[in-house]
Amino acid sequence: MKKCEEIKRLIPEILSGELPEEIRLHIETCEECKKEWMDWMELKKLFLKSLPQKEISIRPESILLKAKSEEYKRKKTLRVWMFAGSFIAAAALFLFAILSRNYEKISFEDEIAISEDIEFYENLEVFENLEVFENLGEENEGG
Amino acid sequence: MMKVKEGDEDAFRVLFERYRGKLMRYIFGMIGNYSVTEDIVQEVFLKLFLSRKRYKPVSSFRAYIYRIAHNTCVNFLKSRRYKELSHLSIERGNGNVPPSFDESEEERERIEILKREMKNLPEKQRTAIQLALLEGMSYEEIAQVIGCSYNAAKILLFRAKEKLMERLRDEKM
Image (cartoon, rainbow over all chains, first blue to last red; front, side):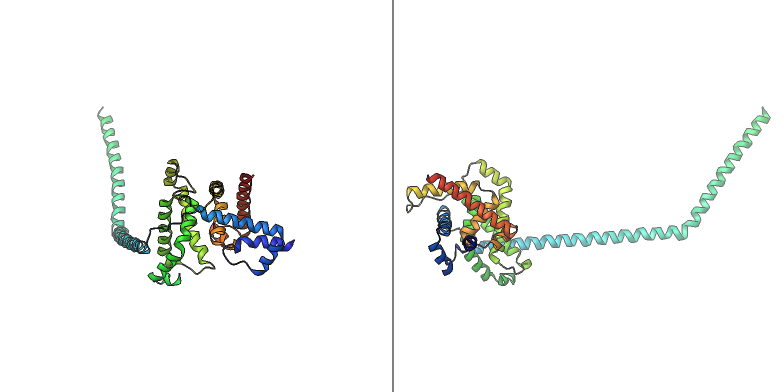
């Protein structure tokens, strides 16, 4: 029984090859395995007859030509992307250099000037307020 | 394939000659339309050549090339073009195959039943049985093509075979 199961398992794998002697002998004597073998052979025969027998009209040359043109296109696209990539990288570097240079200027030279400016405007605001108060005082005195 | 990997075009031609007929029959069995089958065969060989540099030797080159074919067919079956073709009621399974004069009336009927039932099988079962009938592939190779386990391939194959034989027996009665 175990042998039958093993043979049934093997049958689909030996459909295209030569039937091993051991299996052939078993099939001749075992009705169950013979039926399994006949089923597979019937399916194979019908299936092969259901398929077109004519050859395909494609030639390997046309595939090779298409493959080469595809590869050329891919290389070209890759080159364009590499150029675009290096251009973007260069532009980014340039921008970074400019920005970092400006940033340095502000931090070393203009920082003091800016803080002085701030101080000046703050003082100016105080003086303006004082002036307003003085004017108000004069008006009150006058009135 | 290792020679093709190195750019040997003659080796590619040899591979093409060796597999074109079998692949054509396999793809026709999946798609059922002759002109589409030609396009897909071309696409399979194109993919094979374009991916040659990435190729790593595998246990079965046959399973490798059939896997490319299987995936290309599955993609096509999911595509809009296939739906359009189905809409135009292009018959799957008999496409442009004329009946042969060698066949008896009974045999022709049985072939028609088989075509119809093949078409009704789930895609993986259909692939499994076609690979077995066309190539006598091992379960291991079928599993590689479909992308499933050894046991799953075994089950797919036996279920497909049982369904087909059942229908053929029913019609015989």
